[in-house]
Image (cartoon, rainbow, N blue to C red; front, side):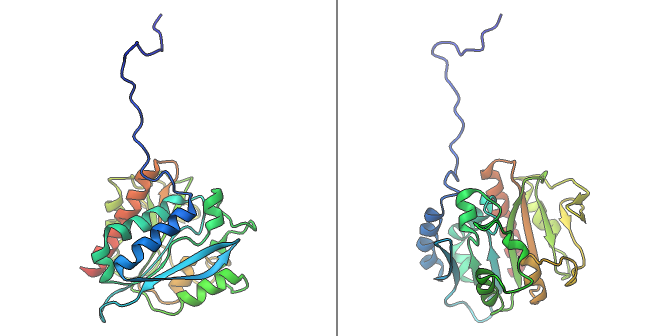
Length: 265
């Protein structure tokens, strides 16, 4: 009979430490954003409070006159921590590129959810189904800021527990399409989701494209607001929550890299 115990003196292999071990620590996230913001020319303001937690809005204080306008958001679902980690990681790694863009960033729209690892906010509401109206104060304040500017590119970062890999919604009809190149950039970290239907939409190689009307969903997600506001390109990027968080973060970072490269190429 073979013993399952290690032999005396045998070296025990330990797992590599997590790079993103504090992904649900909102106070740490705020400190990192406040530290990086001056290095990339970003102003920082608290645009609202949610359950006692400040909601940050960051925007370019000064950018070149012809700078492309880019919108980023993450963390509207608190159980999707790779989104908030990846957005911050990308900015930390790309200060030179970030200074060449006109940025508007919402680094975490649901801090209570992030802290408690919950999709919803403290009232049990899915904030990403509230953008068709302004009755919720936090969403109303967010909407007002979103609608202040046009956007050449909007990237909204998410995760999905049912996903088999990486996928995205390419909402706007602008051509040539960018979805294939973004998914290809993510593939070293996560495989493309192989499902032919994701939620209620047809998908191919991790890409969902569908015609959007105001009646497509009665309860609008954030992406619909950007779409109907006239953003030239809107992408909702999804990673699979069952994969390692470090891989998910890197997949999101790669998606941002690819989209920004296509924008400024």
